[in-house]
Length: 349
Image (cartoon, rainbow, N blue to C red; front, side, top):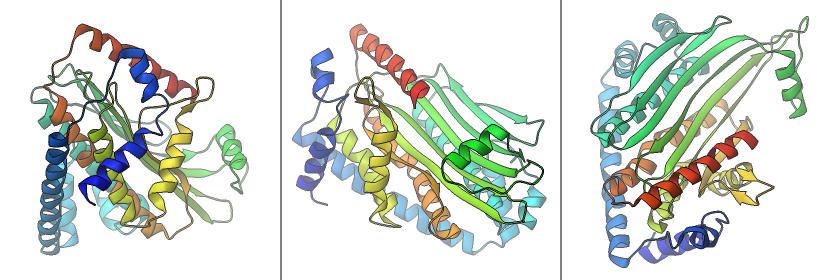
């Protein structure tokens, strides 16, 4: 993509942001900062980052090819923030099962994001809490607080199983799922990784992401499954170059699997994170999807994996670019006011 095309894309994205384009400038002055030289730097930086990521992936594939499955699992386990919820021996025995593959992916994602945030912060480290659920399963919660760059960052994994409540069954049926229960019970397994990150500097945006897998076993033994997830960005002050970088990174992750994915899931995100009574979307959007089951399970897993792997490259360069920007008390106050609106989105969406 040429530099001109990138900038056109940025203008197009910005034009679809009712809550953070003209309205934001009217409420608190001009919040858009860009220049030709900075655009060139961002474009060059993106190219370098893409090259480094491609090189890393090539080396990683070569390393993995030299390991047997047991050695590869041990290598992955050693990199997690905590032991996985499921016993490693069970993960090894059922390595081809989607539940095992997804649990390893979300644990990988948690560790990758946590370590990238710690490097960007340069001071604080994550506190790790491994918890158990009485009804079945558990999770790993990682929290970084009062760092140099981040006021608070949480990256959490949950892997739970048991029986769905009647309320959950009715809610799923309302979404069009035909579920066969036995004695009113429906076994399920659900797992995912989720995160919300709040920076100190008003010029560093907030990011939210989650990726999840759900599986149920009906009374006749038939299994239903689906994937869900997404990543979205909420700046306090809009920067065109950041928006282009963020969306372009997600688009490239989606385009590896289908050219239809990015436009479809971008629109879904825009529509989902929308406060009707305010006529306002949350931030600059991103991608969002749920109940994905139309393609093969393996194809959709590969797609979710690409999206999860895009979190660090779509966000950390923006953090590093702005974490040392100067800001005024008024800009900090504006960040806190916008954060209150962010909470409202969580309550109504």
